[in-house]
Amino acid sequence: MTVKLPNIIDLTFKQLQESMESMGEPSFRATQIHQWLFSHHASSFDDMTILSRGLRKKLSETFSIGQLQLQGRQECFEDACLNPTEKILLQLPDNEKVESVLIASAERMTACVSSQVGCPLQCPFCATGSMGFRRNLSAGEITGQVYALNSIAAEKTSNNKITNIVFMGMGEPLLNTDNVIEAIETLSTKNYSFCLSQKRITISTVGVIPEIQRLARSGMKTKLAVSLHAANQDKRESLMPIAARQYPLNELGKSLAEYTEITGMPVTIVYMLLKGINDSLDDAKMLARFAKTFLCKINLIDYNSIINIKFKPVYSSTRDMFVQQLLTSGLHVTVRKSYGTTINAACGQLATNSTQ
Ligand code: SF4
Image (cartoon, rainbow, N blue to C red; front, side, top):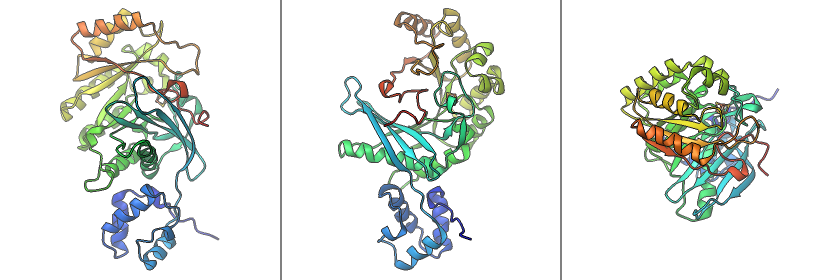
């Protein structure tokens, strides 16, 4: 009977350092192996010629290497941008697939990464939700997505590398918090080749209250975004039934107030405007009342997905009225541009079946 060896990709950087120590190797070996795995995309320990033959043998007797494989790329050019938004399809070692997006704007190169294959929360406006839930991604698979996008960024010009990471791809990151945190710790490790400040990483959630409380106390410096989409419990339940019933609005408001108090950092409230559903003056007033109870800014986004004809984007005049009402209430509001809509790479559009 053949024994299945653990995939070394799934080890966090810290676990890899510990593993090197237990093999009697200096901890800098972990950096070398990590670079071979993620930057050089090694698929065999024999490729790691910088290591001694003995260590390569020991590694191959202890671990397997199951890399993420690039299966497809699609790009589209946004207005006034030098580089295109690019969506990639990655195959995981067990043949499941995820999509990730590289968003280029004048000032940043943002990696939008997935945390789950599918999503258990099944919001009706979201293409990922319609896939159902397959599994959580490991910390290594999350890290691998960032590196895959980083190599694509580097292809564009030599100076291009990822400047920001957002967990806004497939899945609910706070239903896979352990692996998300481990991946962030690896990607923000000081003196390590990637080393992105945690302040440039945003975790976007529908409002998983216990995990928001955990993040608040974790000491992480990441930013938090919460997809609200309605500031009324009944309306929110109609838009995101599973999440809204499990994490009611009033409890969510309290947990966000606590989060901002503990961390001193504002929360971004993401509100997708849906024609005739959550776009009235009353909706704007309810949102203002909710948002004024804690430190936050509001991002308004347009509806992008094409999967449910019940939902439609609002007219610009409606959006202007909504913005005005929030500004009048003294809130900080931005209207966020959607990138990648023509290649189904924008919010709510990722589903693994559209990348060629
Ligand atoms: S919107 Fe987010 S939480 Fe809702 S189904 Fe899609 S991925 Fe899941």
